[in-house]
Image (cartoon, rainbow, N blue to C red; front, side):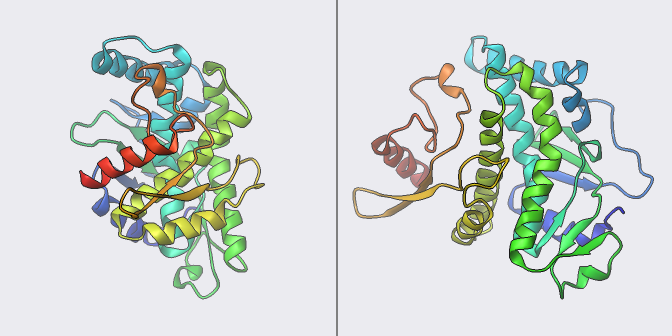
Length: 282
């Protein structure tokens, strides 16, 4: 049963206020999903055909424009998958984190447009297919609600909801990438963790997010690979610098070998400290 807008709207409003680069529109009953212009349906990505070709053409053009060189096809696919999965995971993890509600989104219920000027990530049009919540939640009486017994059961719902949405999308991208299976689910793990971690920082709740994510992904939670993998480094003046070890690589090093991110498996701790201090200063 579709979830009413009131179950998720507050969470998505807080997300947009903290991070204006992403807009989320909840579709009403009977309201068609957008398909024109820059919109692409997630199930079109999952099919792996012309819809995915058009989607990845944007990434290929962006790389050529910004870096003056062509990227390998598998690198383009890696960039495209990241740029879709990062906001898609937030559809599930943000309501879970903020209100303890876990919506379900089959791939056919999400459309994405990243071509809007001024939106760094883009916009999503979504139709939740029900949601899980805890006993005592006022939303438990709403249509589409399913009450689960406790926090661990709700975490299991969150893991299942992300996997339900991403599994067909990963299957669509898989043939375009050199690494499949475990490596793709490593990317999914990273998108879940780093997306919510980033948004929680904007909300002033970074430390709570780290604790919650460690419980959500403690390791051995298939199909996900590894754990949230947070750890702490120490700066030159004794300051605490939280970081994590990614389960996957975004492949950006193939374009700029000297410019890896602070959580990249290729970045040593000394370089991480330098990058984290620079990010803090900026």
